[in-house]
Length: 113
Image 1: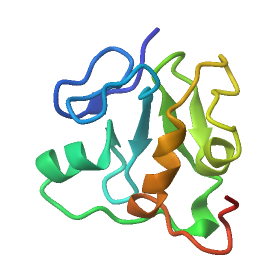
Image 2: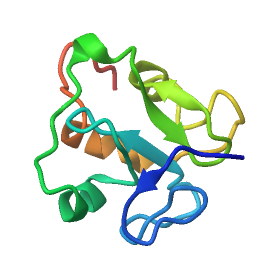
Image 3: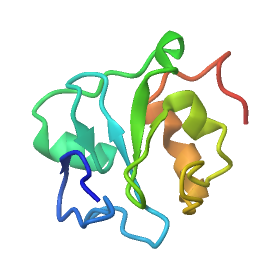
């Protein structure tokens, strides 16, 4: 499997990082601000040198989530609606990540809890 480059602190082969390294911490997010995949917001804050720009609801159909299990790229909407499982390989994602949506995505009318 050949994943796109994922930036971060101590990133492993499935996109876990020094901040989030549990068994289900296997997604990376393409940042709206720089178009680079990062393992998490904290990795971006440490390494990017600029502030995170939120993905607007109007762009939630852009592929911006990477499954570290299989390399599938999901749209933001697919990710939010996948019930913490990769639709391509079935790998489990950390359901607690939804508590961090506001750090990456413009939340509001487009978000269903």
